[in-house]
Length: 515
Image (cartoon, rainbow, N blue to C red; front, side):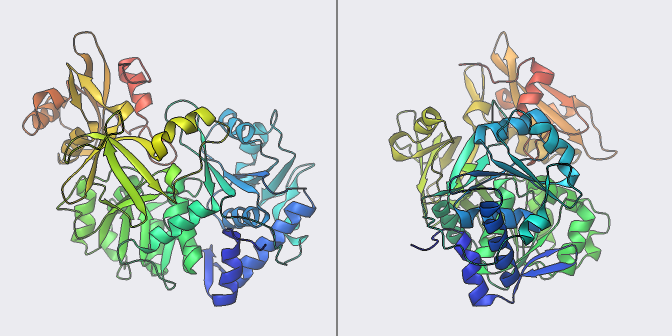
């Protein structure tokens, strides 16, 4: 039996279009033939030199880089499991992921070496492989390890149902969980990506700058691009002007960024001096995108669309296409061809159109469960459907609108308030740069609605003005009872606002009121 996993993509690509450029990084261009050979070498070295076997876990504390892609595909060719780790975590948090996954080896950039070395003690990691630096005593240089392997196909018996990655959820509440993504899940996601909007093509170019340790940076374009033989231009970190310059110089045709990144591009003073004429598709995901951002890029002639996905769905679930992005503003669009979606009540009964319930999903892209957490897995997969924890409604045209996470919904005086609805109003105020709405305990009402707001430069207004602005546009019970002014909203490494921290700062609790 031959390799039936994603590792075979590179081998097949090398045969079909081996001279095409797969990766661009700091001026270096790596073809598909070269990438296939290097991943085979690394897979052999991991197996023969470090004893990594099928099912073993390979930790990855890596910046966006060719080594990230190489390590993930080398593990896939072995039938091992890649464990990308958020490098913005503290050492105890990295240590938790390594221990939870029982990783045998950790591949880390020397730039993150101090973090890696602090996290390893107490885990079962036997080998630290260091990229771009002089490794310490007992450590292994990445290029030396790779060079020791033979660039031959391994012919491992990898099946579509084997797990190829543990993607740890962001952990905005509680401990992060490892979502088990199989080769079949990632294959299904690649097929879904091909059916989004104008589709993806072998001739496409994208700038991979969203962090690949996160499922959005990895799954929206990076992995599907390798499947179709397109070109990933990789940036190690996000700088707005450098990203625009790279998009222009490399003639990027499609681009994925999270809303905070799109917003940062808008603020580049000489935005119009960058030639983005090759850009045919701009995709935002990871969080709801403010209308001001969508309108800005549409005004520049960029076809802009929003996508919705989750770590557990590999990630693409639905797309709000460019033709409907303003008409259906606030919606996550319609589910993709190979994704089934329903809105259900607490007893999993279908809700009527325009009635709020929980979004549940089914499809080949849905993950295999949470690593070593059978009870959490069983709870997530009730009645054969993945329960997302997102509250939403669907209209008579099939467009789904999420109103919030179950845990983030505010209940004040018996009325349900969905923070996204209030945030979208605040985003429209000309002084507001970013806003987050959340609930804090209130003795009289159970919870009260609070907004944390960051202003644009030299555009501050009194909080009372923002409250009045909301009251002109929303039912009074939905409006903030107070507005807290912040310099920046607290976010995790993937750009999601940490409402738990805001509750701690302004309400004395990290969790929503129990109900």
